[in-house]
Length: 506
Image (cartoon, one colour):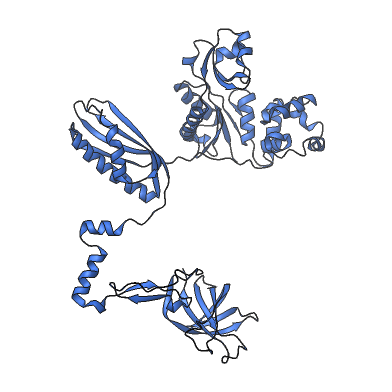
């Protein structure tokens, strides 16, 4: 049985010295986004305008709301909350959903688990309301509108009845509906969850039949609450950001030594990012001094990178004002923000020149030792015939004039030096091969793509040259081949067509 717990965090006791609200600017003026307990007792409510709240409590202090920071804190809280379950999900703006399936016995029962939750939040000066129920919707309703530390049990078919009985006296707001839907239900005289079953499901369905969103349809929310339909949740997955560090045998105080350590860390970070297929957008370097002080410098980049030299150049200006004190004993470089960055081929020639082994130098040595005619290289040639699509020429010869690159279709990864004749044992009436024998083994064809017709080069072939129809095929074992039929039945240029295998696909 799946169990869920939802925890709501509020402002701690340090903010309860007086009425305090967090406000957000709107078109009609400041609106209250969050408030502490004293402001709540004074009559202020979340979502009301600040001017209305000040008529009830003129002494309210204000501070700007920061939704992005709240969401980041909630995400960290969700990761920390996995101490009570294998995974957790955020219920913004102030809630957590944690899967506690088969976990309560580790704490001595469900009541002990909720007590541990309360103690852990109290140590961090956070107020919390928690509940355990078989479904996420039921846990949300109990933690917001039910008694403190509510627990609803039940397994199998009895779970739905247990949830319905435990939540029947809760207000309809416990269904997590939009405000306009709650207004419609109150006008219909439906104020409690237990009253939804008194007017019949068909009557509610007719009124809300055009509402597809769960937050706009009370029947969908009720089915989720009772466990009749699943409710998709998005777990919070922790991403381990790349981090490299150096613990120095002796503290360093001079800038050249610090630059050398930074260069080593940048190279390590580049290798770490390359292994993950990522590039850094935000980097943080931390310098641990002997006296315990930590100096942090941050760097944000316009585009993802993993170039060590570029990272060192940018950090050089950031470290000019660093006071090493009695010395720096540890340096740490962390990529707090990384993005996917595709791997690409580096400059082989430049790297090879640095080590004295460039390709051009190697060719020169081979040419001198073996002779000019012994060394050649393949170059593309404008021909649709596969075996003529490249030529070999000597390195010093100028490339032959051509018409440019031809728009070829996909070609196999490996072409045979000479196309090998195969025996097609059966072909469909439209010409697709179904079974063929190659090198003494029979292959059953599972998939066929084609044909791609290649005509003979009339300026160099005789009039009796036959057409080629190429097929990309896959046999029943998953291996792929590139075959072609030489000729067409009844083309007047020979007997029955022959089949050849010319390439192997990946």
